Length: 107
Image 1 (cartoon, rainbow, N blue to C red):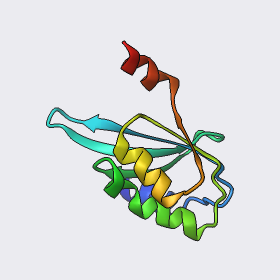
Image 2: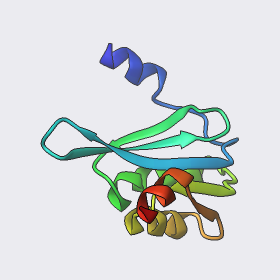
Image 3: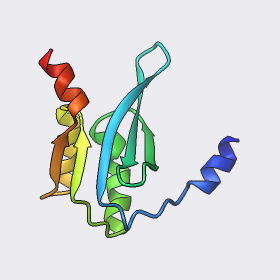
Image 4: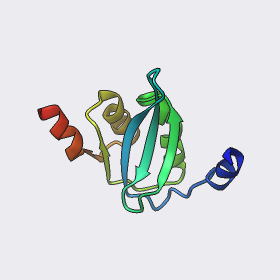
């Protein structure tokens, strides 16, 4: 199953992507994390990588640049690692802190 998924989703077209969401999720109980990037318009998962922050996004942003995507906005939590990576690789893009994370931070 893993090899089938890898074959089918190895090259997801990125050229038409305009808005993204970036977040992480914990895997297991040992504090291991995965980073996920989602196309906000289609809901399609575009990228999943081990770890979180800048290093987990570097290869994705390279592929996005090579695809010549014209991303307008990226939604993420308030982790400086995520929004600084977004601003480094996508200068001029709007960074949006999603409502869920703003609500959590305000409590």
